[in-house]
Length: 268
Ligand code: 4G0
Image (cartoon, rainbow, N blue to C red; front, side):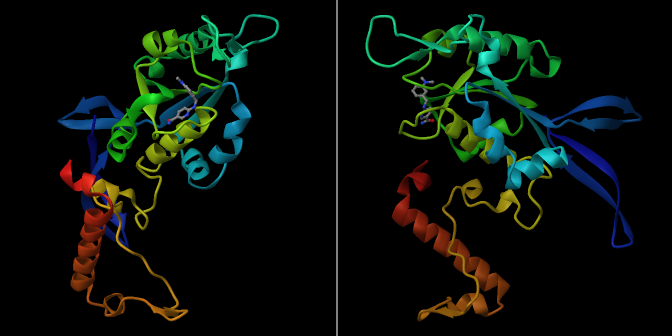
């Protein structure tokens, strides 16, 4: 699923042959051993009873820019549009009794069936955000960033009818061992972590490749001006201009922190 573009790049008036790595694309035509590629954007579909919840998070900052640049396209689907009763109900009482409401299976199935009829979505993972899911990680974000499309299901209330877990979701993801009122915030956490990895979303300057978790370590300490604040000085090495020594210091700091705070990251 990783393809390369070979071509000529003009940079500062100089022409250079380049080989650029691009993900998520499909070969169109092969001519004299060269592959013509079409770079596709990632589609992210969100199925929710609270579509307005996503307006501001997807309409601000990095996610907004990613949408505008064409790296990703977001689609938010209102579960209520897939109900058939006159009250447009998305939840009901639990069989066997007990407190709280359970989300009905039919609207989730009707919405996903509708989406799956699109060719681009036929093989897309259907991700149920759930405290019972597989723990989310940077590794998982990297894997999801390779997909052409993602479909997120957001549940609410006490939970979702088990048939959605068993027969509709292809995976269940948890962002951590705690419960929040709906799957919307957890879905946004996963979406943010994935979108910032897509080619062209972050500039070279704040590229994701330098992320500490990408290297399996915690990040090193960062400082900006002023040199001294309330008596606390910036470590002298950072002011020295010795790039090799600075790189070594940062590596040591990252390793020491990881050893002290997250021994588990070194063991795995
Ligand atoms: C209870 C995910 C609550 C059950 C969702 C969903 C935390 C997370 C909810 C479900 C959530 C997490 C079975 C879909 C909604 N809370 N840790 N609340 N099911 O990722």
